[in-house]
Length: 302
Image: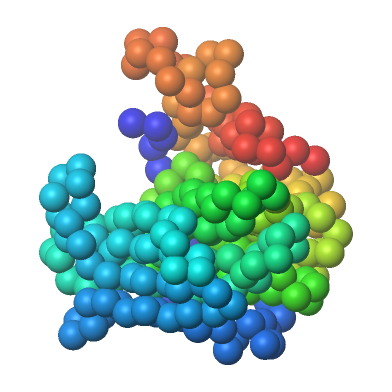
């Protein structure tokens, strides 16, 4: 067990936290919004769209590893197959998955394809890929990762005509508290030359990150009570660090923190929280020590 819970937010915050993954301050995609797309669903197990010499096919098919029905993407360039990629099966064989043409990478002369599929289950998971053309003419599927929830949508956050992907940092959702009691900082990812980069701290996204921080403050103010929440403050301090206010948020956390109510968090000596070691080697530390260890390891130092 990583930790023992003390007091948490009242349930008045729960609907706001559950809405966390779908809120963002983003610019409209403009002309990109009209690019062809496919969304499989019950009664629609296959579809095909085309753009600029590219043909995109999405259909349910048996994936080879487990033999389950899963969305399968095929990309053809001038009639020649250049990408074949399976998404994630949901375990029921229901048609699902979506793919769309979109501009994400300015380093080539073609649009990208954003492909998602959903595994189903509680708090899980949208698997996302960006399919892009490399400088040598080859096509590559870039694994963007698995994200909590069933919605992940690229948006032009900074208004430069290229879409980015924004999502809560998944590492925070169970780190210090229950899922519904946890907040998370907003990560922003951009695609360039076939590589996905974390651009969360770049100045061009300062407005979006400030808006995310404002949402966190609002949720805190709307909590059913003022009980200390380790899950909230972990995300709040991390998000504050992204906009240069980490030290201020840390002070706010310490002012709200009561060590007498802290049952402690278990971690491994000499490793970032929580670490990986036998139970008999774990030590119990206070919340501030565990949180600082976690923040530094996750890249949210200040």
